[in-house]
Amino acid sequence: MLKQTQQQKLLQKLSPQQIQLMKLLQVPTVNLEERIKEELEENPALEYGEDTHEDEFKEQEDFDAKTDSEGDEEDDFEPDGSESEYDNIDISEYVSDGDDDVADYKLRDDNYPDPDESNKTIPIRVETSFHEHLLSQLGMLELDDHQNAIAEHIIGSIDDDGYLRREVSAMVDDLSFSQNIDTTEEEIRELIKKIQEFDPAGVCATDLKECLLLQLKRKPQDDEGVNTAYQILENYFDEFTKKHYEKIQKALSLSDEGLKASINQIIKLNPKPGGNYATLNKAESYVLPDFFIMNNAGKLELTLNSRNAPDLRISGGYKDMLREYDRGDKKDKRQKEAVLFIKQKIDAAKWFIDAIKQRQHTLLSTMESIMDYQREFFLTGDETTMKPMILKDIADRTQLDISTVSRVANSKYVQTEFGTFKLKFFFSESLSTDSGEEVSTREVKKILSDLIEAENKRKPLSDENLTKMLQDKGYNIARRTVAKYREQLNIPVARLRKEL
Image (tube, rainbow, N blue to C red; front, side, top):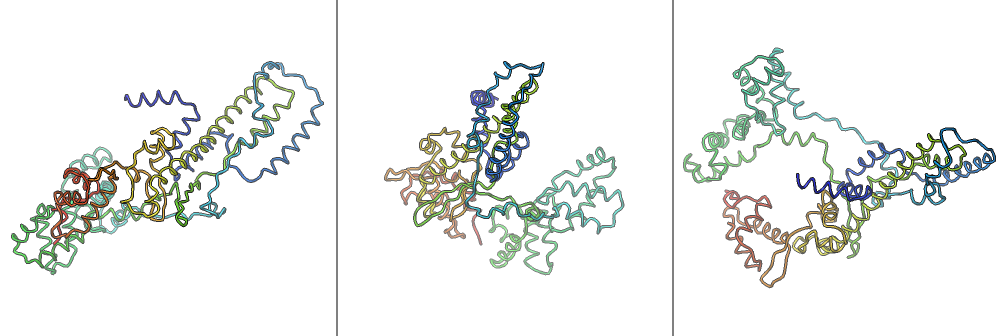
C-alpha cells in the first residue's frame, strides 16, 4: 500500500507527457500497435499519416483562396458571444504555416522493406482445443442425457495438462448446486474410468503415478520391460522418483539390462498428456524483437524495430477547423467551446506523438549503451565474455533514471546473429577472481553449466566437487553459492542427474 502511495505521489509530480512516456516505455513492440490503436480510438485529433502532403497543401491553398474571397463580407457577432471571449483563446501555434512540421511524425522500419507487407491478408487459424478434442470423443460412448451432462462436467474440470485435480465429492456438490443434477461419487468415478480411455493416453488421471500407469496399460502386456515398469510404478514409485535404482533392482531381482529396459519404458511416457496438445493448439506466442544488432565486418549496427508503430500525425480536419475559425467573423460562445475542445484534443495528440518519439530515443539510447558495454558478447556470442552489469551502469552512461532503464529492460528483446535475448539477460552481478578481477555471475553460471553438461552421468558431480573445480579455475566461490546458481539454472542435485 505504501509503495502504491509513493507511486501515486510520483505520478502527480509528472507532466502528462512524462506519464505517457513512462507508460509507453513499458510496452514491448509486440503490444505497441494495440496501444496506438487505443489512443486513436480515444482521440479523433490523432490519425494515421500518409504521404499526401502535396494534396494537403493544394487543398489548403484552395481553402485560403476561398476564405480570402469571402473576407470582404461583414457579419455581425452572435448575441451570445463577444470578441473579448475569443481574444482569450490563443490558437496561433495551431494555425501557423509551419505546424505540419511539428505535428507530423513518421515511423519507418528499414528492417521490413516491403511496404505492402502489413496489408497482406493474414489467414485465420482454425483450432480444436484440448477440451474440444475430449468432448468429441464423448459421442462414442453410449450415455443418456443425465450421464452425458456429468461427463461434460468432468471434462470441463480437467486441467490443460490433462489432470483431473478436482475432488469427486466437490464435483457432486458442483453438479447439484450449479446444474441441479443429482449424482453420486460412484457414478462419477465410473464415468472418470471411461474418460481415462480417451486419447491422449493418461488423460483424466488424478496424479502423476496414475497418469503413467494408464499409459503403460495401453502398451503390449507381453513385453517384459512393460510389466516390470508397471511393477516399479505401482510398488516403488517413491524410490523411482528419487532415483534409488539400487533398491528397486534388489527388490525385484533385476539385472542391469532388465532395470535399464524398464526405466527406458517409463521415461518415454508423457507426464503431461494434455500439455503437448494444448501447446499445439494455442495461438503461437511470438517474440517480436524490439532491437536488431548486426555484425557488419566487426562493426556493430543497431536498429530499432518500429514495425508496430505506424505513421502518426495531427488530424488535418481538426487543423482546418481551427484555421476556419481563425479567419471567420462569427465567434460565439458555442464556437469558443468547440475550439477549446479541439485544442485539448490536439494537445493530447501532440503529447502522445512526442511520447512515442521520446520512447524511440530512450530505447535506442539504452540499447546502444548495453551494446557498447557488452560489445564482446555481441561480436562473439560467448557468454563468458560478458561483463558484470547492473542497471546503474547503464543509467550512468545514458544519464537516465535507474527506474527508466528498468522499464526499458522489462519485456524487451534484441535479435542478434546468436539468437534473440531478453534485455534482462545482459544484467548480472559481479564475482571476484583470485587476481582481484571482477567477472559476471553469468560467466560463472555458463562455466558451471558446461561442467555439469560434460560430467559422467553415471557419477555426476556433487556441489562440493563443482565448487572445487570452479575454485581451481580461479573463481572465489562458496559451495552454497554454487548450489544457488545450479538451482537458478534449473539443474537438479547430483543424485537426480544420475543415469544408468
